Every structure is written in structure tokens, then in C-alpha cells.
Length: 568
Image 1 (cartoon, rainbow, N blue to C red):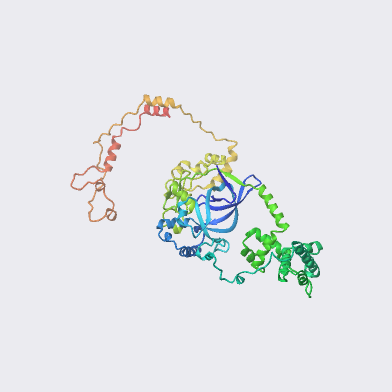
Image 2: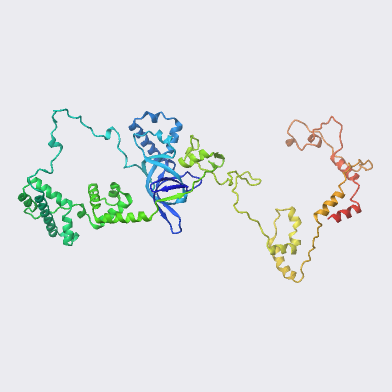
């Protein structure tokens, strides 16, 4: 019994003739009939995608080898390179539901790391890697955006430590900008009072703005919007720019044109856009590029990311998080599946009749290929189950050299009562003894049906008398055979009294040996038995038959016929 939990990478079996599927468990749901279904993320093998995409994947692999600059990949034997292709997978965004009873074990799938040796996947059992994302609908293959940037090209240049007494010659004003001075002359109370004034000005500014009055129709909502971080950031920035002078800072909050209105992404987005974002976040997660492309193309990527982090501070996010937590509590966390034992199976095209051992079959089911390259790699063969018995032995039809499928359920032909009656009534038309000796002779069923329609009503008045067959028990038959053993048959004596003058023996003419007997004609009796013309002639078969008939003592005697009749 094995335990499978959420986020586990597992094998699924959807067909006994194909390799196992590789999936990641996202959810475990219990159906109404009590079965457990797993909602999984799909991974695809190289054999599952088209040859065009395989060429693209090979090109990406060569580029990665050049970037890694590892001689270990180049020095790999051809066998290990062949097996390494079986360990490569392609991630997809596709989700599907499969019965949990089809799980056949766990495996490990990781994002390919440039610093990790590819040979390490061959050293580990049930280990796979992926670096590309496959779209089954669009039939595209793209690089995973979650690629880990490791290497010299992606590291920051760290300067050396300054020695004691050494001055930093860089211009720090160009490298950073001071936004707040904690040693300002203002006290904490004065700063808090200024922030209250800034929020009040922001509320008043929203009351004057027509679009804001539609989005926040109540004073409470306007005050809540004015209390966001965007208003506080603007107030502190204004205070810093005015040299921490309260009078100048308050005057900057309300310039000559009216109060300053500061809005963030939460206010800029409409309710419909917020619903689209939540739907996209449910589908793609934090993949903001896909969210922008498929759901919000009119929004910038910066705006979407900023809205996400502000949305996480709202009550709606907290409510959704609580709902998801409650749903997660009601769902299954793990499932127990009994261990699955593999058997021997036929593999490959039917004409080759290939079979795999248990080890090779397990490798085929897990990795989708054989350990050694074969000439069938391009044909993508699978096990042939049609010509196999439950014990994995080929079956044949009697007298037929072709393979056949063994029927799962035996059947027999049962004669109806009307057919049985027709056999008795229409003996002159059926002629059962003649048909038994000539099975391919057609039967005129129309005439038999018409004859039955005429005679069957009369049969009820005059039923056919059937002879009851009485047979003696087997013991009496055995005793009789023991008491009367069969006498040995004497050789028939040659009869010289028969007149053969009226019989004409068959003359055998010599046949030239210059050609094939099938071309020149039929061979004689002597040539068929290897006799030549130099030896004396023997009696022809016709003479021998006539002699046997003449020497036959005759038919069985009367007492003997009575004994035979008594035995019957």
C-alpha cells in the first residue's frame, strides 16, 4: 500500500499498451459514488509531440549545452544519450481529472538546472527534468519563464573591500537619492498631524472629482481610499521636498488649482477589471505576463504587478484565502493505492513477435523507450495485445496461420424445436445422410419451410412414430468381447482357378528419362515404386485385386451375423 499526497509527481496508467503518464497531483476529490479522482497537471514526453517540435527541442538542448560548456555531455556514450532523451519532459498548463486507482507509483520531476549534470538523472531511478513548456492546443513549445538564472552572466559584480583609511572615490549622489531624513527637526506628533491633514485633503479632493464620486459614492469609501499608502507617500515626499517646513508643506498640498488627488491602482481599476484579474489569477497563478496577454492586454505589466500586491492587502483577498482554506480542509490530503505488479507483455509490431522481460517492460512503461536504441524508435511501437492470451502466449486459429483473438465467453448453437421437427417431416428434401457427406451443398430452406407449413398441422393428428433405441450396458459389451476375441485374419490364398483370359492387363510403356514426369505425363506403377524395365514383370495391381476378391471366402456366415446383430 502506497500513500500519495498533493503536489506529488506520480505515474498514471491510461492504457496497458502505452507508457505510463507522468502527472502532478493538484487536488484529490471524492465523487458522489465514493471514488477518488485526482486533478493533475500534465507532462508530455518526446514521443507525444510532433517531429517539428522535437527538432526545436533538440536545438534548444544544443544551445543549453553550449551555455553550460560542460564536456561531460559531449563525452556521454550513445546509449546514455539515448536514455537521456527518455528522461526529458515538457510541462503544460493543461489540467485533467483521472481516477486515483490508476496511479502506479511516484517519480521526481525538476526544472533543469544549468549547474546540474545531466548524467545525474540517469543515476537516479524515476528522475525526470523539463525546461520547455508545451501547449497542446496551440502546438507550440516555449521556454519556461521560471528558468533559474544561474551563472556568471547573471551575477552582480561585487567591488573589493576598502582598506583601512581608504576613501571611496565614487559619487554617491549619482548612485542613490535621499527620500527621507530621520534626523529632521519635526517631532513624531507633528508628522502624524501633517499626515492627518494630507488624508483630509485627499478626501475633499475625491469629493470634488466626478469619476471618484461614482467609484466611491459614500464618504466612508472616499475616506478609506484617501487613507491608502499612495496618499501617505505623497505627503511624506512633499514634507521632505519643502525642507520639513509645515507651512510650506500644507500649502503644497492645496496648490492654486485645487487640492492634489493621488490615486493608486486599486482606484484606477474598475470592478469588471478586478473580476477579470481574479479569474486570471485563479487560472495562471502569479504568471503576470500570461494574465496580461490573455485577460488584460490594455494594462501594463507594472500596473498589474502593483495591483496584485495592493489587492493582497484588501478584505477580499482575506475572504478568498479563508474560503480556499476551508475548501482545502474538506478535500482529501492523501490517498492510499495498493502496489501494482508488472507482468510479461508482447511488444512491437505483431509480425516481429517481440517480448520484453520484466525489467525492460518496467523501463518502457516508465520512460517510454527501450534501454538500447532499436530500428523501431521512429515507429513508436507499442505492445501487441490482440494476439495474446491471458498468459501472454500467441494464439492461432485451427488451420489458420494468422493470429486471432481468443473469445472471452464460450458459446454454442442450439437447435430450435421447429428445426428438429423439420428434420423428421422433410426427410425427402433434407436428405441428412447425403448432406452429412456433402457439407457444402446448399439447402433449399424455402421448400423446406413450405413443406413444414403443410405437414406440421397434420403431424399433431398423426405423430411420427419414433423407434426407441435400446442399448445394452457397457459391462455386457466388454464381457462379450473378452469371450469372443477377434481371430487373426489369414492371408488370402492365391487362386489359380480364376480365368484371366477375359481380363486385359495394363500395359506399361517405358517413359524416357529426359524430362520431368510432370511434363511428359503420369508415371507408371513400376516407376512410382522405383522399378526399372530390366527386372521381371510383377503382377499388376488390378490382377492382385481380382485375386483377393476370388480368394475371399464370402460374406459372414449366418451364425456370425446373428452374433453381431445380438451385439448391436
